[in-house]
Length: 298
Image (cartoon, one colour):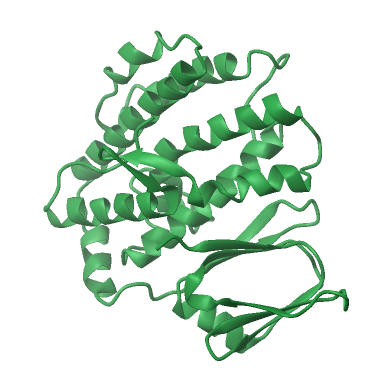
C-alpha cells in the first residue's frame, strides 16, 4: 500500500483520536479533518506553530511514520524515526555490524555503477549525450577506489543544467540547488524509513562514515535514486524557471516524489515501495541470500 505524505505549512493542531490523525487548522473557517494513521508514511512540519500531542507522536512512530521538521528557510532540517522497526531487529543489527569490508566495498561498487547508469538514463531521456558515462560505469572498481562517482558527476551536472549559466552542484549553491536539496531531503527520509522497517540501523553505512551523521546508510542507498530527483527538478525548471524561494507549486511536485512510479526489476512501482525493496535486498546481501542490491533503473 502506498503511504501518504502530509505537508503542514500553516499553524495547526494535530492529535490522535482512536486510529485517526485529527487535523485542526488555526483558521476557524476550515473544518476539522482526519486521516487514518496507518495510511501515513511521512509528515512535513513547516511552521513553528504546529502542536502535536505525545499520543499522536507515539502512534506515528508505531506506524513507522517519518516526521520531518523544517527550518526558518522552510527547508527540511531534522528527521525523526522510531527506534524499533522490525521484529528481528537485533539479528539484523548483528549481520549489519559484522559485514566484512570486502562485502561493503562490493556493495558500494554496485551502488555507484547503478547511479552512473541512472545518470546516463536521465540524460538520454532528455536527448542529451551520455556517451561519456557508458564506458565510465564499466570502470568502477571495488569500493569505487578510482572515484568514478566524482568523475561522472562533473560531466553529468554540466550536461543536465547546461542552460543555466555557470551552474555548480553544491548544497549552498544558487538555484536550482535549493530545489535539489529539498527533493533529496524527501528522498532521504523515504529511504531512512525503509531502512528502519527492514530492521537495519540507518547510522551504519556501507560507505558513508561521519560521526555527526545518523543516516549514513540512507545516504548510501539513495545514491541511485538521486537522478530521479534530478530529472524532476530539471522538469520543474523547464516548467516554472528557477527561484530563490520554493513556492507551493514547487513543493507540491517535490512532495510527490515518494509516490512517483519507478522501474525496478522490470516492474513499475511507487518509489516508496522501491526503497523498501532496496533495503530488503541489503538485508539479504548481509545474510548471504543475495549478492546484488536491487535498485531502480532509468
